Amino acid sequence: MKRVEKGSKIAIIAPSGMLDVGYLHKAVTLLNSGGYEVEIMSHVEGYKTGVFSAGDEQRAQDLREAIEREDIDMILCARGGYGAMRTLQQLPEEVLKGCRKWIVGFSDITVIHSILSKHGIASIHGPMLKHIAVHGLDHDDVANMFRLMRGEQVSVEVSAHELTREGRAEGVMVGGNLSILYSLRGTPAEVDYRGKIMFIEDLCEYRYHIDRMIQNLKYSGILEALSGLVVGQFTDMKDGATPFGQTAYEIIAEAVREYEYPVLFGYPAGHADDVNQPLVMGRRCRIEGRKVIFG
Image (cartoon, rainbow, N blue to C red; front, side, top):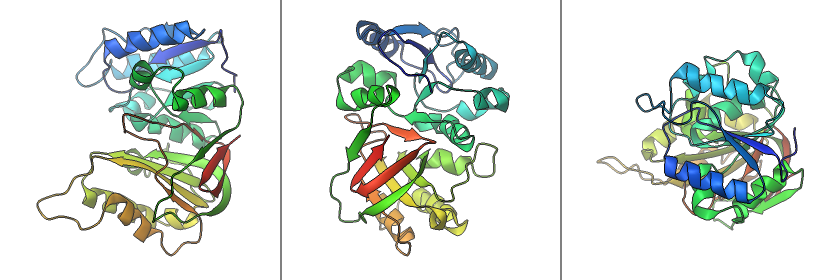
C-alpha cells in the first residue's frame, strides 16, 4: 500500500449519500494545513440525486479514477449513508482488485471494505469528513489513522466490560456495519469469514433487528468459524411497543457464548460523535487481552 505522509495527495470521493459541504470544505482546509494535498473528485459537489451524492455511474467514475490515477495516494470517503452497493455494481471488480492505496471510511463504506478484504487488499475503517472537520487532525483517532497509513503499529485498548471474554487471537480483520454485512450475504462482496477476526457496529436499529442479523450469522456458521470478535458502538438502539428484553451487547454475547475465542465489547469505533478509532480491514491483526493491535 502507498504510504501517506506530508505532501501526499488525498482524493475525496462520495460513493454513498449526499454530504454536508460545510464539513467538506472545513476538512479540506484542515488537511491542507496539515501538509496534505487534497483533490475533491468531479462528482462530489453539485450532483445530488435523491438521497445520493450523485448518480450511480458518476460515483463509480470518481472511485475508479481515484484508484487508477498514479498521483493519488489515499482515497477518503466523504460520508456513509446509502449507495455504495449501487456504486460497486457500476465498477468492474478488476478495478478494485488492482487498488494499492488506502481507502478510508465506515458505515455504508463497509461494502467497499468487504470486497477489498475478499481480495486480500487492506483498507481502513475510520473517520470521515465530519469527524475530521469537528475534531481536527490531532484527535487521537484521526492521528492513529494517519499513523497506520505511515506503516506504524497502532494498539487500541478496549475498556473493561462485564461481557468481554479476554484472550489471544490472530487473524485477518473483516467486517464493519452489521446491517451492511447482513445485506451483503450472498453477494460477490461477501468475504470468507473462516478464521477471521470480525468487527461489528450499528446505528439506530431495533433490537429485534439486531437479533435477527446476529442469528443469521450464527445459523449460517459464520460466528462459529471466527477466531475472534470485536464489538464496537451500537448507538441509539430502539425497541418496539414490546421491549425485546436484551441490549444489543447482550444479544451478541448470548449468540457467541458457546465459542471459545476472545470477544471484546466496546471497541471505540462506530457512529458515536466523540471517538472513532480506526481498524485495518483485510490485514492480519492481534487480540491480546483487551488490546487490538494493528501492524
